[in-house]
Amino acid sequence: GENVEQHPSTLSVQEGDSAVIKCTYSDSASNYFPWYKQELGKRPQLIIDIRSNVGEKKDQRIAVTLNKTAKHFSLHITETQPEDSAVYFCAAASMEYGNKLVFGAGTILRVKS
Amino acid sequence: KAGVTQTPRYLIKTRGQQVTLSCSPISGHRSVSWYQQTPGQGLQFLFEYFSETQRNKGNFPGRFSGRQFSNSRSEMNVSTLELGDSALYLCASSFRDSTEAFFGQGTRLTVV
Image (tube, rainbow over all chains, first blue to last red; front, top):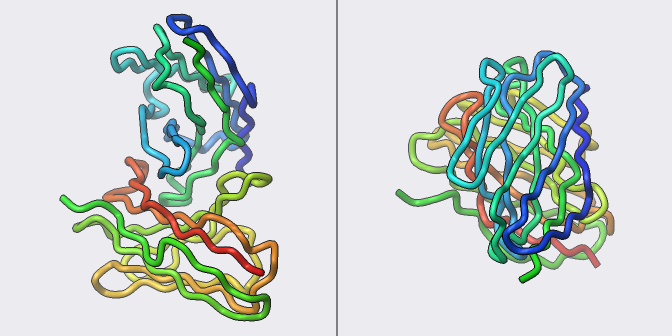
């Protein structure tokens, strides 16, 4: 079945620096790749997503890139702020399996001020 | 509009008991998925219901089951609870396939 690997497991950056989190997926039928942010004690919330027919998507300080050939996608956060500190999860979904999301293991991002 | 609502928020059960968790999706969403979140295993897919039918199932034992009602509300049931079932159970609703999944606050289940 689908497997999603996520790196790094923890990431510490200085406020204002950039953060990059990388994921690889195994199922070539995957066509939807969301990123979720989960703050301590709260629900996961979508921050950005990308579909397989797009190579890059930006939303203010957040961007996601997708390389279908290599089966990997990355989250880029620029000008990090302390409120960016959270756990970030990547996920992959395939049209074959409805809304089933296969998640990466998560990345704990700490932004030091 | 109201978000995804899960009840109860917290539960403490004894090994061997059974438990039922409830999820009310966003109005108009027909897809409800359930996930188990633990520190060791991360977010693991349990099952998805769409228009009252189970459409997908994850790799969990048969003790985990669910159903969906005609109003799209969903319940999941865990029978013969084990200590390892202690986790945060999250449900998510979606309007269409491959679109944003909106998560509820989760039900924190502790098995003692």
